[in-house]
Length: 129
Image (cartoon, rainbow, N blue to C red; front, top):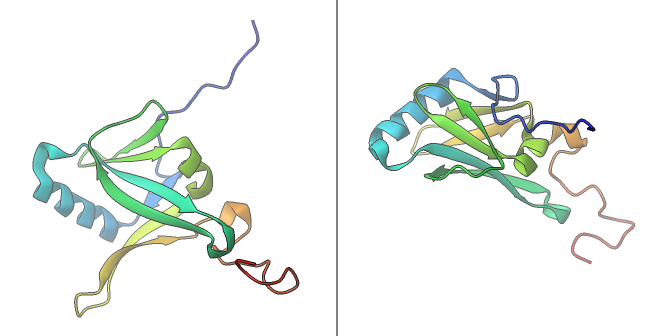
């Protein structure tokens, strides 16, 4: 019988790095929502000239295609497609003051050689052409 690659449903801290600041904020968020949600889902979407975008949302359902990072205090779900774009990303939480605080994703899409911006504009007629 031929060997097939096994789906690894467990993420390690080297797959997705969560800074101490972001980890503390995630703990706070889960304390606020109680037992209603199981995890934070990280996703990617888009493409084209605007590049890929990333996001996070609460999730109450794990799919068969999700890998899980379990910190003990919270879980992070990432599906296989998103993980291909995000492996090695660092998630941080930045508070700039004046109510401007957010999670930031560092080194996103470095594995694809891009920065999420359109590098094909110009000779091809520009973005959206």
